[in-house]
Length: 239
View 1 (cartoon, rainbow, N blue to C red):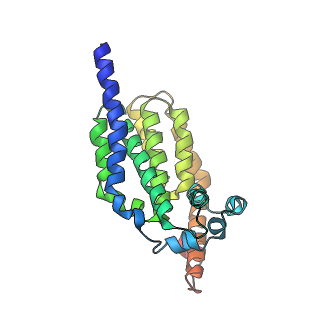
View 2: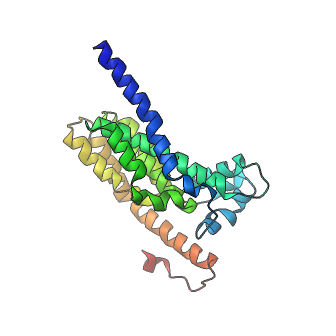
View 3: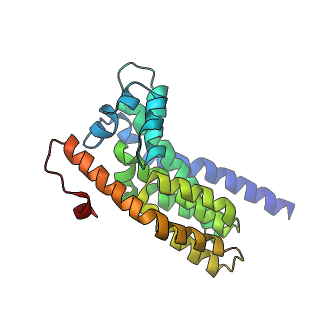
């Protein structure tokens, strides 16, 4: 009994060390990458990031505010006057390592090997696009919060799970279907508070879906203008 507890603690400590270590080693080559593609518009052309201005960042009406604020935080931690891409890449790598730990913990809630779940998540090639591109940090952060919300539902803490889900939704709008998955998960494990997630789904369906589509259309219009294309599609065609 006490021996098993000790061995379990050692295994957990090894998981907490080795899983993020493998995530860092897997993405080690990108640490010296440059700003490319959408990074220019998402970071270099944003005054709030360039001037490390928190007030301006908070005033910006962007749907993906947590990801945008993380750019400002990275810029603040970057002490050089000129923005360097290295700290931004390192932030993506660290966030991915944290998501791998969250995936391992969630896998353990399902009775799976935390080691294998964490390693598969950390090393799977599907994560490359989100981690290697700085502008795709929203996917990494939203994924981290969505995994945490799933783990909390599996651990029978549905109320606590709402908070990371809302953070994921605020970071990237295409994580809305996660609410339906979490509702189904709560039903499968016979959680008596499954109705909480039903209310979340209802709230998204009735109040947020139209707002999100309009925001997406507005973002598409703004991006087209920023790219020099003046004939951007009207909102209804984006929707």
